Length: 172
Image 1 (cartoon, one colour):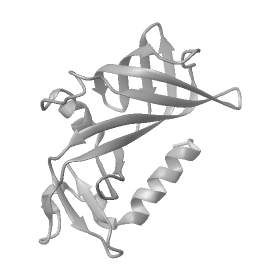
Image 2 (tube, one colour; image 1 turned 90 degrees about the vertical axis):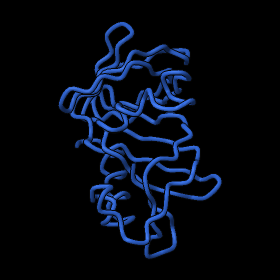
Image 3 (tube, rainbow, N blue to C red; image 1 turned 30 degrees about the vertical axis):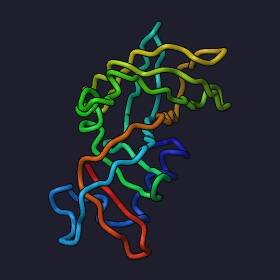
Image 4 (cartoon, helix red, strand yellow; image 1 turned 180 degrees about the vertical axis):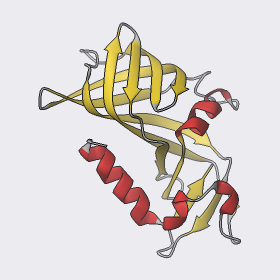
């Protein structure tokens, strides 16, 4: 990935614990059920294309990084395919209450930031498309090194374990 944010997030995820890269089925024996929390999500991609009300992330990372700071600081990640699959699950699903997201992208060497509402995710290989509704003064622009910061979702499925420094690390 060319994105500085992408490289930073990938480094952070890898540094948090090597076990985050494992399948959820291979969580440590001392894993506990994932507590409900207000999870925030980050998706990174090589580029983003905007066409009307469609935003397409190309070269999207295979994992979506997630973190929460309430009620406990927790980190984790989930396969981007699982993130899309769980879009419609639960009484507080993103389908019922679409999330806001900040789109940060490099356009002609400069950072462009805008806020959108996301609906209807579709993943095909490493291409992720959302329908968007612009919430900021100016809509997002097509460009490179895209980072998408997605507003919270109450999620409580999966497992967590204590890392070597005491933090709670989770996987769907």
